[in-house]
Length: 235
Image (cartoon, rainbow, N blue to C red; front, side):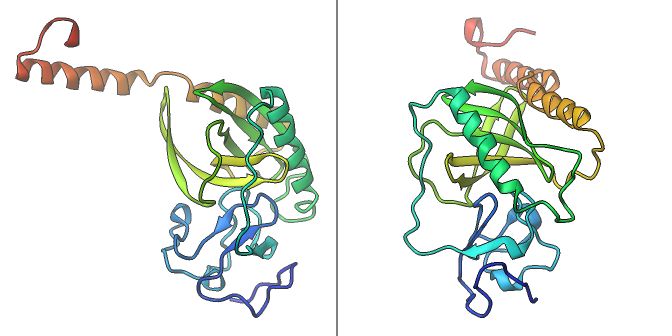
């Protein structure tokens, strides 16, 4: 596969070369591959399918740059307020949009907007809406270092979701879970905002069906083990 990179990396990408997205700074590590797009571990960047895009922001392969050895993560300042953290995130995505304008995945009727951000378990959680993607975003409050491109699950009232670790200039560590990319299905910003609000609100609603299954499972366990009293779940 031949990619016309914007940076001077043609011809120097090896089997184990690590590259990072020039838009959102998500890292592609051949040792890990990309589970979200069924890219097996051991696949070099130059062997990626032609239609592969950044799983974090949807940027094309030409936006990637070689990650230099020794690059350090710059975490967000812990003392920053929720409002300051969200403002920094919006500023970072607005700066990234400059590189997206003109690309097929850029939906010109949409704009960058932070939707429904709130404090949760020491982190800041919300949805970032952009002309090219819609992601649930976590700004971790307890991490000072992490492997870029790694994944970890986060438990919410509605269930557990997998997030990809990245970093953005001026923000620090950013964990993202993709909702939409690209954004071709939206022809009105208000509709996209409503979808983003529904997504973040739904994340914090209890899945009653799952809860009922858990209650029944616990009840059966209580009967089988002969447990009763406060520790057993009543039906």
